[in-house]
Image (cartoon, rainbow, N blue to C red; front, side, top):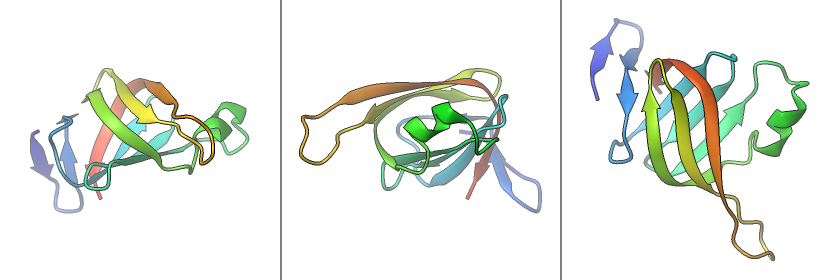
Length: 105
C-alpha cells in the first residue's frame, strides 16, 4: 500500500486483504464503498440513490471474507458474507467498475 499525503486526505493506490484501517473506495460508476478492514465490513453507497441494484447491498455492512483485489485503474473484487439471520450462510462476490480513488477515512 502506498500512502500519499495530500495535506487534506491520505490516498492510496492499492489495498490488500492484510491492510488495516477504513477507506472510501470510489468507482468509475460513481459508487462509493466504505471498506473497513479493521471490522471486516463493506458498505456500498450508490451515486444515484434511485439505483435499484444498489438496494441489494447498500448500507447493509456485509462482512468481508476476503478482499481479493482493490487497485486504482482496476475493478475491486471482494468475497462477502451475505448471511441473513435465521437463514443459512450465503457467500457472495462483489465486482465493481474500475476504482478511481482510494482514500483513508
